[in-house]
Length: 379
Image 1 (spheres, one colour):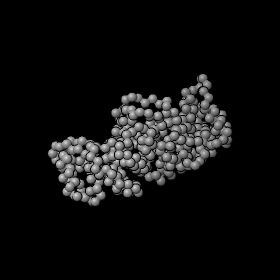
Image 2 (cartoon, rainbow, N blue to C red):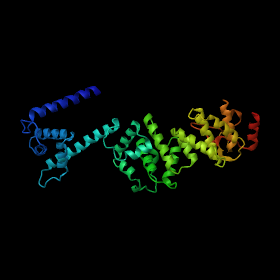
Image 3 (cartoon, rainbow, N blue to C red):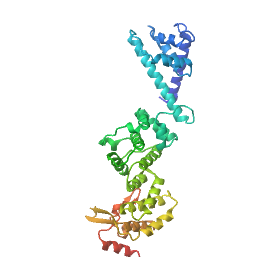
Image 4 (cartoon, rainbow, N blue to C red):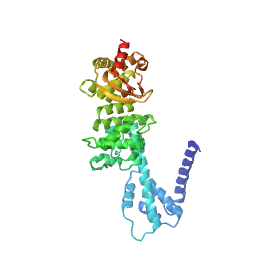
């Protein structure tokens, strides 16, 4: 059935209900404007029509901003007197649940589509928006999280009261977008002084291609990138991992800042410098930074850095041990910027990387003689 047909059916149902209330209410003893007390008593009637009409009128009152609505809330909050029949008790329960559900839907719609209204904000939203932003994408994500976990907002408000188990659940790698957003927001809100199992597990999963959430919608990618950056700014994650994770999820400004921090300090570890050179080159190549001149300076600065960043055992085409020096990275990037293929020039083990141009540990040589021969071949 089409949406148009469904809309017509809903409209007819509303009209018929209104007509029934208008025509049958006097006949059933409800009057034109019965009081809340009268309508509540009508829920005890032996007549199904009387009970149904009373319930509809009570629901209509509950959706208004009136003294009658406040009176109804007060009446429903009172305990049911002893001796009342089960059917009446169940009717009150259904009435309260329906009122709460309808109010929640209205509140949700107002929160999503009228952000500038003076309506009270959901619990935890002020905390969540610090990590995810406050546009429609962030609000939609917040609603989806709270739909699946009604206590999410309360945990953001009081993060120190949340006990995180020492053991990380195995299902962490299979969690969906909503649950990952919930996890990162809660982790960002708590105080993490030292790297623990949660921090290490999250970093590994976020860095590893094929792990972490599958992001299929544009708003998911936008919000998740913000949450990832917020988390990385709070958690004690190694700079090398921060750069790789940031490149994966599009946190380009953070990556640019981290790369500049690493490359401006020659005392950083060779592995960090290697990754930072590749990441910054990828940012320049894809137009995510306007400071490409800095890359040229750093390629010159580290052109003679013979510190070993990685040692890797290659099995194809033949088994051999590859050692990657920092200067190998600069060499490969210089060749790449000239439009040439480093593999054709002698870097036989080099492998492409989806985000870093080349897989860092594959940019190397089996021996110093091989390295010098390749270097000299293009001089």
